[in-house]
Length: 436
Image 1 (tube, rainbow, N blue to C red):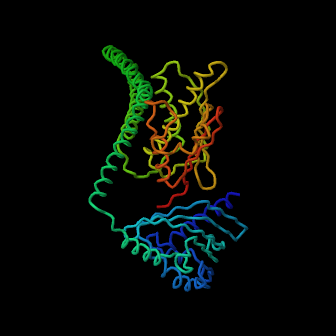
Image 2 (spheres, rainbow, N blue to C red):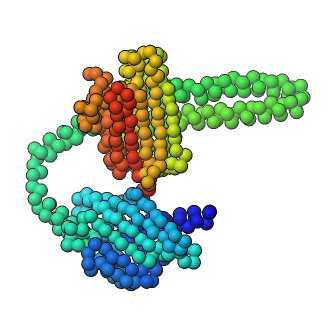
Image 3 (cartoon, one colour):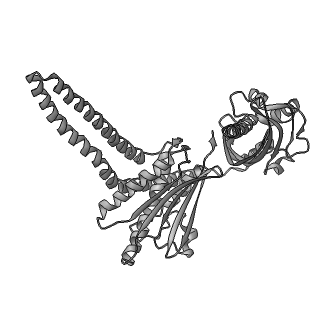
């Protein structure tokens, strides 16, 4: 059973490496192809001329024509990758997206690819390839229409003659205003976090203060034992001091981590992605948001539940940006249940559920509440800038709009399910496999 599992892992790895090499996105693409592909590999693309019956034909017809046309900084993402494995034969199929700049113009290219592999000498070797490209009509049947896109971009450049000084200044003023609004929204969310952070940081600081007092007493006792010549007793007291110092260090690091998290949240994001534990991120912001609201309103109370999928490993995201999205959704959920509690004080238990799940090569983060839901008549407007259902002065209407933009920038999507009077559920979907 373990052997079959290893074979399936190698099968998927071979597929990812093969596609990356075909598109010229590895350090030595042709060497990678030589390693993965069989001498007698066959295949075809979208165009009639894209048929090959050997490794040599593939290199000449496909790789040398298309494989080196992508810029080196192109970004490759995989979606919905699935496989079937029957003894010594494996079939992998899925879709991918390439984001790249061509002559200064942003392009987004989607493709579908399936590959048949054969297990030989403890390795998978590609024996048949099929590629299907939705945008092939742009280039008379070519699978990867770089030439057509380049010509199209040149034509677009010739038509763009509207950059007058007045338009430039208007655009710059609009961008400055947008940045100020975005930073204001970020600082507003930081203010909401402050009370929660104060509560969280108080615990490690209490430990540090208490152990410091204990250590002072232990030092005085150890000094007395040394004066009396009781070296053995003094050593025992020294051991206790060492243990306490380790605990002080642990709680000091915890306080340091909370402060650094607050600083990261407040500063402008660099846009840089890094491997992040999404379960830990969601759990941390749930607790901070709750304590923040409790600090402002001692009467507020809600049941917090989590259902975090342990199989969700670290994924490449910008933790500050995704953290802001999660915080915004949780704060909205708390607001909704608190409003409903004030209207239905008897028998109503405010409940928030944060859950994660990994499915079909994607990670899903859900924030659910049993509040009053969102009216159907305004459901289509919730992600529009400046639209809010909150009373004047209690919401800018930028939170969900910014959240939408952040998730889209990560190659994901944000959805909402709701029933008026009963519940709301916001769903974040992020790619689990991201190869840059």
